[in-house]
Length: 393
Image (cartoon, rainbow, N blue to C red; front, side, top):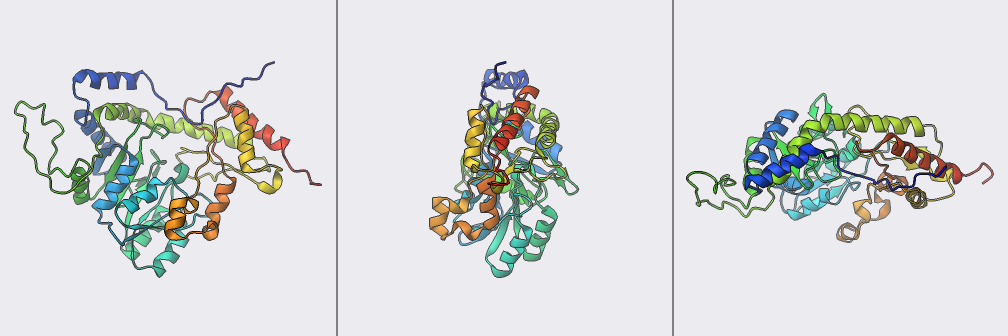
């Protein structure tokens, strides 16, 4: 019997005819940039998450930049975040002339350690903010972080790129801090291709973000060409950015939002499948289960002393079996820019380095079939037993 070796992508968007029809509707409307669809997407997202303000942007990166700027982060300030993240989380701090101050992750998860945050805060009075990241969709300890916010008078901007649509006792992840930023990139839990959303209950911050996302113009001018009395007049009140979301993307997002709960249930089922198949293997450590985990990523770690091959070689074996694999994340403190700029050494954040050295990410998206999931699990099991270290070495 021939084994199926068709490649299984690591990530794939879950799109249907509803998204196609929504985009076609926009194309036929004659209005392609930001307009009615974006406004409706914001209104629906606001209602979904229970926040007072939702502002659509062209990426989560731009959303993080706008949120930090709106809350007054500027030159000379320091903002605490984790080195265990994609570069966007830290680079936006640099956009504003501020400095990221990295803090190690917990040994029990991939999220920033609140214990380490507190240690840093007690030594550094120039810290103005914290960007916690809900890595893979596992919620950070937002209760502890918000207590630190109150004690040290800080701004908290949640990087919620992985965590939609999970909710805790305090509310949806992304709505608990001063602002939260969601990603709708092609691989995320819902997608607009490229795009993001900033949410905040702070009215003044929302007004600032609204102005700054479109060139610093003092009022909405998105449909100024469509009204019966078009207005060409406007004022530039600050040097803003070009961060608005077009209606083509927003129309797709509106349809994805309707499916978000179903996508979430499917990802949870996939995670449960991996736990059933892989939890008894002595050469893997599976991610910790958590209440309201979004399961955007499923991130096992090899146990090096149990195997005769490295993490990279383990991944290569899986790839040879037609399984798409990724690694989240290469720590920022070992990247050339941050290493040279701030003098970091790999051992400065031991838990981050340990996680990175051994972790890999399995596919976990709604389009995976049962046959594909069985292939993925079998490939992991077979590879582990093939290279499992015996008791005599």
